[in-house]
Length: 570
Image 1 (cartoon, rainbow, N blue to C red):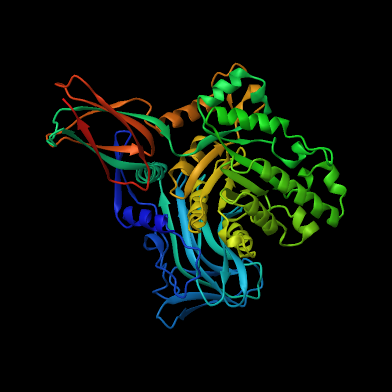
Image 2 (cartoon, rainbow, N blue to C red):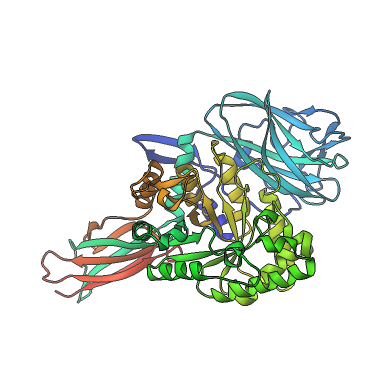
């Protein structure tokens, strides 16, 4: 959370950022990445001063706002003098205060508001109502007695007037609203945010000081810097066919150093017949990965979808299932303990609840507890789809956060290295990048590391994920057609790039220094550079020296503004 706060402050949220892009100066409000998962006694100010919202902080009573549907709206003032609006006497979930705004085709809109309810704890959503449809823009689990931040967004596929509405399916509660904001951005401005963020969170400034043995500056020394390895985990799914094809092996190992096995570690693959475990294939894939310096995410220990269980599991009684899952988790986690960088402990348990229905509400929390006991130094992920897509109520960021809290509240689980896995399966539609970014903001406020675990739709999604300060890794579920990756193939049957593969290679090159860079030391012996985080070699030679000096160094987010002294003997 502190990292997010520092990043936000650095961006100077209320100032304009200027970026030279494609030969043009693009001026835009900086994007406000800040968010909070805390429920506050008083709400924070409206982001962007409210943006295009009229009377966003209700300083002018109800000006700009009307009642939608049945019910009544009234202004109230808190003890601290804060004005807000209350919607009461509601009879329909969409009975709400409303404001009409014009959305312009192609623009992205960031939305936020502070929400409270009259009693209990309920989900409140923001919706954008056009003449033809209701588009969900975000939601929050609101409480009585404190204010929660609802953050979301929408992309305008065509120009139209929309009504901004708030929804609670419990019509008995009053909805309290304050400090509403809707800020528009062009696609160019949105891209500029990504570029600015990449420079701030994926790079650090490094100063080299080249000196003689007598400590005097060596002006004119040639400093050559070559990146050996990026430290941002950017990987690709892998399946069993890699054991059958050297072409597949060469294709993979030349590009990626992180992977997730698509099916080979899953329960239905390792124990097809009860009591007959077979780890031959995943063992061989782990061996290949180790030999090629490829880090592995363990996927998965359990899958909460009833259709994705081994066939023999489906007929077990609750008591027999409890014995089977204990054997499963002991077997797979113990076998690969210390060899993986992560475990997807429970897959998709916001959409499904097979184990909860069979073993009780704490089933997933118990799995995390057991996995942690067996492999305490490995990140334990909750892996879910739909969270960053928009429109998926079950897997909303609010519900994801609620599930995280339930897992961590189970006795002993507070020490778990819990992490957030977000599948980026957007289908064939245009991704709602505004909603995606706001979802990452919300989950990033938990302070837990976020990985995009099954990224698709390529450049838009990959660039949005890589640029977000809360995202710590990306693994695509993609690969060559020869390995039966059909939905988003990166290479054809001859391992030649598809258009999607060209995009991935372009980003791999863009997000690291592929060629050695040469610089000349100034009159004080200094060379100042901005470098992607990773491992490097630097070679220094003076025009009058007969020998050169080479040393290795690492650039990380934890060593900003580093100065590296290089001593040259002439």
